[in-house]
Image (cartoon, rainbow, N blue to C red):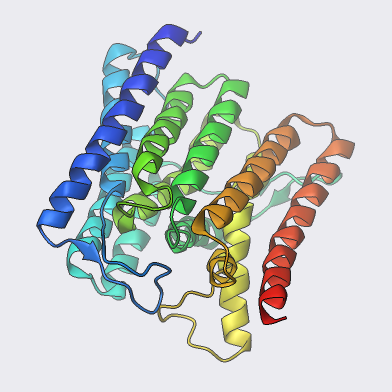
Length: 347
């Protein structure tokens, strides 16, 4: 079904163009003063060019468009709405990188694009639960799907705080969704997922510690939006009601980090919506570990929870509980590692 040679050529070109383009973007942004100045949320000490994620957006969308021209039969319904909406999300992110767009405008655009996807692609209305009948969400599927899309856009954006983290997570998630696409025999989503992975790997060539450029909101919001919409597209073409749970497992480490940090700040009566650097991975860096350690930890966790998602989809009912339990254990380990690191620093 798949033209393996064509896929390899496209991915090799995508990775090279991403690496080359991010390098040129670094020079361009530096010359024009488009820099991330260290602030309250920052984990870096030196002003660094920003906007490398725009290349991820271009490589992914243009690469996918070229693939569609070469293989017109590789098509799924409604994917054009994702492409348009994802570029709008990336555009408002790019404007925010340049001009610091007010949060209300960013949220409004994200909300509008979430509604476009819900109308064009669909919502989560049935969710498979191991050992039980599927849960029919009814009208609750609409607000939950809206929260899923907008929430993941911002949760992923929050992960772009240390060198290599957002790019590494994106590469792993892209590979995992490629494997899921292969399992469901969906070449269109397979090539989209692989293009994401390839463009993130090219970006990492400049973003691994010490980073010469940061991703910025253009790339992080695009990736968050993509990983929110991919499972909806997959659900449409496969009809597998286990996909919503699998999608949550793929994103589990950064959903957990964002959720735990938000609730912790509310509990401590800290302003939850102001800039800060108290996400788990940032606390690990503040404990004295290099950025690469935090990035490797999150890449490893994302790989394990991503494989758990894949095995959850193919497993029998009894094994489904095992993969859910394993993911829960990994999230506990994620938190314990940070807490132990902070304790060691105090001692």
